[in-house]
Length: 202
Image 1 (cartoon, rainbow, N blue to C red):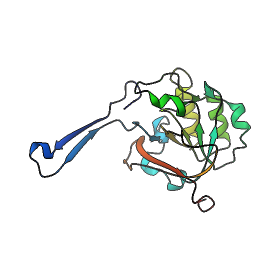
Image 2: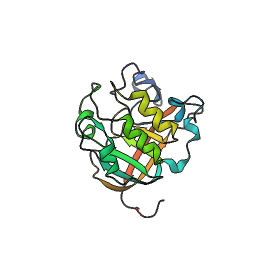
Image 3: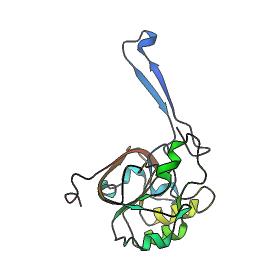
Image 4: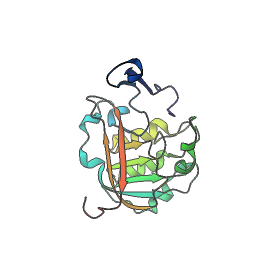
C-alpha cells in the first residue's frame, strides 16, 4: 500500500491460521494512523487541538459537494472562488490525482495539493470539512504544514486519501467515519458517497 515517505508501512500478519492447524483465523495489523483513506484532527498540526475522538459526527456525515479542479499543480484560489462555496459545506476536491496517482504503488511526490492561499480561503468561509484525492491536503515540496494549519486551525476536518475517480461534480451524501482512537491526531477511515438520499441529510 502506498504511504507517505517515512510513515510506518502497513502490515497484516496472521497470528492464527487454518494452515497452521488452528481452528480459526486471527490477524494482527501494524500501521500509522495516516494510512490509506484517513482523517486528520486539529491536533495533527495545532498544539492543544481537538483529537480524532472528538469529531462531531455531522462534520463528515451529510450532504457534500464534489468540485472538479482543472489545475494540474495545485488547488488555487481562482477555481474555489468560482465554485461559490458556502459556510458549513463539506467539500470534496477531485483533481488529476483520482485518474492517475492511485495507479502507482509508489508514492507520487508531484500530487495535486491545496495551496496555502486556497486553504486560507476555505478557512475564511469557513467550511465544515474538506476531502482530497491523495495522501495530504498540503504539498510534498510546498505548502505542507501551512495548508494543514490553515484548515485545521479553522476547525475544518480533513479527509485525505480519497479515490474520487468514479464521481462527477455535484452533490452527494457523504458518510466518512474515522476509527475512534482516543487522544489520537488522526485515524484510518471508511468513506462512501452516494446519491440516493440527497435532500434528506443536512
